[in-house]
Amino acid sequence: MSDTKTAPKKLFIKTYGCQMNVYDSERMAESLEGYEQTDKADEADMILLNTCHIREKAAEKVYSELGRLKTLKADKPDLKIGVAGCVAQAEGAEIMRRQPAVDLVVGPQSYHRLPQMEAQVREGRSALDTDFPEEDKFNHLKGRPKARRAPAAFLTVQEGCDKFCAFCVVPYTRGAEVSRPADRVVREAQELVERGVREITLLGQNVNAYHGGMTLAQLIRALGKIDGLERIRYTTSHPNDMDDDLIAAHADTPKLMPYLHLPVQSGSDRILKRMNRSHTAESYLRLIERIREVRPDIMMSGDFIVGFPEETEADFQATLDLVEAVNYGYAYSFKYSTRPGTPAAERPQVDPAEADERLQRLQALITRQQRAIQQGMVGRDLTVLVEKKGRKDGQMLGKSEYLHAVHIDDSTAQIGDLVPVHITQAMTNSLTAVEK
View: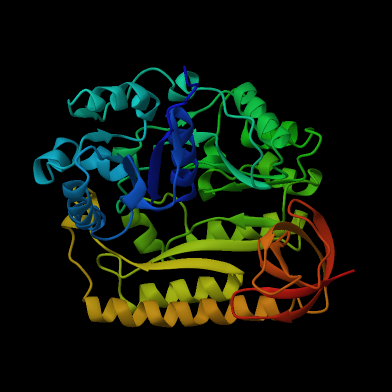
């Protein structure tokens, strides 16, 4: 009698949007036993689209992708197609109505039920779950596998948002703020380190509102005691939750990297109030000052929305003034786009051409700041966490303390090494270095 094993089914996941979706995709793949991941959709037995609802026309982009997958399914009738994430939460059963090729729809708070849903679709029944269940999904996910992994990893510690910014769908797609218990976060971090991870980025829609039995500052200090974990980062933060102890952690926790993403969205107090941001330009600038007092070399990153309803040229100029005052190493800027169901969607809109022109001016200023800061790194000695091989022979690629991508020429380093380097050149989006 032959001892033959059934070949594992293949899973293809396409991830849209934020780092939290990257983490969620990893956990979904881990939960589906009997599957191995593939990077080729045409050889998959199941395709999952893990979607994001932040960008303009997000749902339509998903439906367009599903239209392409419908053709694939016509040639491979046993193929199962699922939609997960925030578009799944927002659209629900409408996805299956508009695209009958979809077998499974699961929201971001329900994906711990994915194995049961997968079994259901294998029996020929569609599966839909967009609940906000009372149980903690993380309690029901299987333990993470022990396989070796990349040296940098994301770790979700907080989800949801209670802020209700006028432009944002997150409270409706991710729900209210919920924090994972600190002991479970620490345990998962330890497991990641055992698998070769040396840098962890803590994730949350409002990560500095973390309250899982500890504050975020206390959690960072607890993680700093894990042997083998060398770097800690966190994103995304809200200015209103940046308390004194978290600021202090940037001075007293060596493993906390000198990089902070702190979205402000606008430099105009009038627009900030209309956005329901609950902070002012002045309070934001004073906060930056306090952070730089304890960590003078910190690299600041931010988010900006241009052309928010009723924004005037004077409002936009206030944003440019704030950017000049802060001097960002990175910043992400977007033209406002309506989200149905949010308060701002019903307000008078800025002329699209004018919004485009403002966005170009803002991005030109941000680019100048970013390039000047990168150029200022030339001649400095930094430390790079090596993440993969570069394109050239003998070249390795990794991240500096400040999150700059760094190419190390003629390197003898291995993936996962922390390498002291000397920066020799600033490129458009990266730095070049040699080992010290």
